[in-house]
Amino acid sequence: DAMVIQNPRYQVTQFGKPVTLSCSQTLNHNVMYWYQQKSSQAPKLLFHYYDKDFNNEADTPDNFQSRRPNTSFCFLDIRSPGLGDAAMYLCATSRVQTGLVALLSGANVLTFGAGSRLTVL
Amino acid sequence: AQSVTQLDSQVPVFEEAPVELRCNYSSSVSVYLFWYVQYPNQGLQLLLKYLSGSTLVKGINGFEAEFNKSQTSFHLRKPSVHISDTAEYFCAVSVANNNDMRFGAGTRLTVKP
Image (tube, rainbow over all chains, first blue to last red; front, side):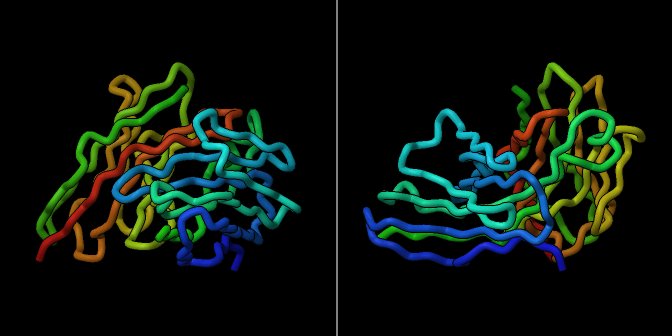
């Protein structure tokens, strides 16, 4: 089945030790997103790739970086995790089109992975 | 930018009772509206979406929602809930030609026996 897969599902790291979370998709979607979700809060968009174009949210800390080496894969790098970075990290994809095609095709619908829960000790 | 407000952070309800989870949005342009469900330690799963056309949309698991443009609302309803419906529900909004989807703070639905 076509899907969005995140690895690892659970990651434990030490304060300041770099972490990489991965996301892969078989949907051939052109947009990939990374969201941070803290306990009992809404998912917060960190950044997204529209094809190869990187779009960073204004309030995303520099500690968070992302790479998209190809259509299928996207990585979230946390360079120096702090205690406040403990959260669920959600990857999502969508096929974004414009105009009438978007209305007819159901564009802008996000498909989520199961998430990666990060614990910082 | 578009935004969405979920008016209830928690909704407890007994099994087989009806439920309504409220959502209001704000946008200066036409919107697309969504409801997602999240079970513990899982990602978000699409329940239903409004893109255009009929204002009453039906989704999975017996849920439905009605788009009300004059009241800028998109409330989620189910006539009879099950224990398995216990989860976090998120309302979300996006606009045409924009890759940005904004989520509400979520409503925790707890179904009690």
